[in-house]
Image 1 (spheres, rainbow, N blue to C red):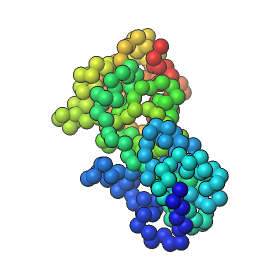
Image 2 (cartoon, rainbow, N blue to C red):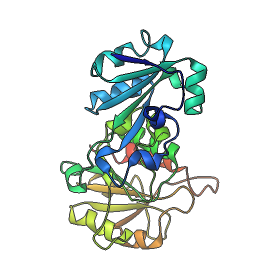
Image 3 (tube, rainbow, N blue to C red):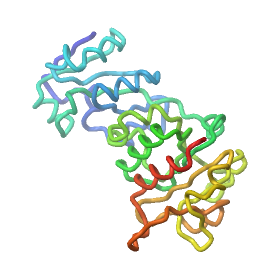
Length: 274
């Protein structure tokens, strides 16, 4: 390993861990140079298992031969490993590191929806879900409960956001995902795109013509795309109208909705492939 002791926070090489915003890390103008940050040995290991490329490591001194040792052994010998005191690293990142390890990694090349969904039977579409914690939780449930792919509208949170990655416990590396666009640039156009790929589309919403999530029709549907909306306003009416089905989770005591992360876990389990 190429161990580099940090004595100053001014080094340009350390910007990725401290001063660069999530948007700058994504590098939309030059996607091939985009990066993301994976945090904790477990999450970094999952990313490496998925074939993602590490660029550098930031690690407390005591973890070099401890929690980070297995990660370091799996990385290229010439890759820089930056290290320093716990206090110095916290002043760089703005918080105390989880188990003392961060890894900057190359963003994977985006796939098309057709590539991601080629063999999929159960997928979820996140429409405008912008809370990082919810996105991470949804990916974790998707991985655990057998969802084959996740598609995201462009106004949703980036799954490789640092917090989303951490909350997902690395599940963002286990479930294929990509951005869902349409030729006309509208949400309704994106729904039609799903139908063209052979999916029955089911919007999670409350409406007079909705059906229960345990309806036998849903369980026998060959290819199902479950569409979930924002934490506050839910799905736009135009998206609900464009879907083949409207699906609800029955509730009690006058409660009309659940947090989107909780609703996703229930829906994934109920509608899993049999």
